[in-house]
Length: 210
Image 1 (cartoon, rainbow, N blue to C red):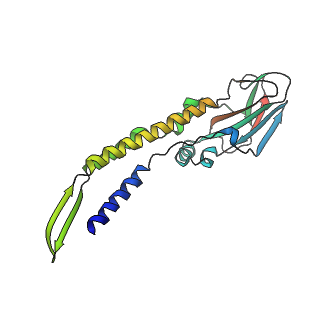
Image 2 (tube, rainbow, N blue to C red):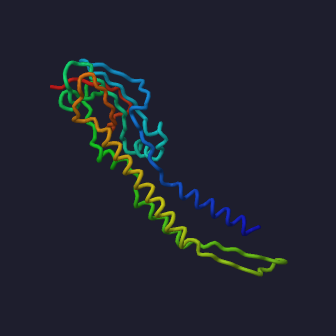
Image 3 (spheres, rainbow, N blue to C red):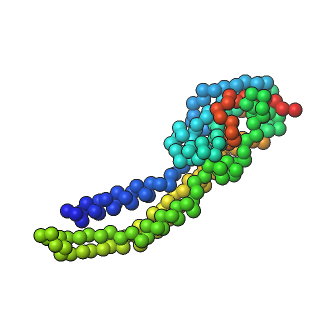
């Protein structure tokens, strides 16, 4: 019985540790419901905060809060009679202050999971699972298994792989929905994700720039 319980506890321990790194769930801006809107000079803007947390990316959302970075999903519709360029012709503003979004790589670097941090799990390499059998209060049998030789490297490699893949997928989506310096045709609607620093949850507008 003691062996069975110990094995169950060990297995549970492995499962808990294996879940430390988090996968990345895409934000996918076209699928979101936008509740905040603005219209300036024939350009419609809709936006949404807290998209990482809404999609279940809790680990990334915590880094977002810690680093003072906000990922914002953006929807822009060109109702004007000419082609516009976000960054050249129009820019985002919080009140009277222009917002300067971070580039995708800088955004990713700010909120990424720290892959080398999972090397600490190699310390589990020294873990041993011990079993003791007693009869009449006397130890009759002792067994020790060096499970850490498998446990440590397996958990380390697994978490590093998951974290690294999640970071890559985040960066891929940031580039896919990079709206900066992009031409938007007449009547076209485009979606984007921008990363900004130290802005809180300020209302956002889109304005023509000289």
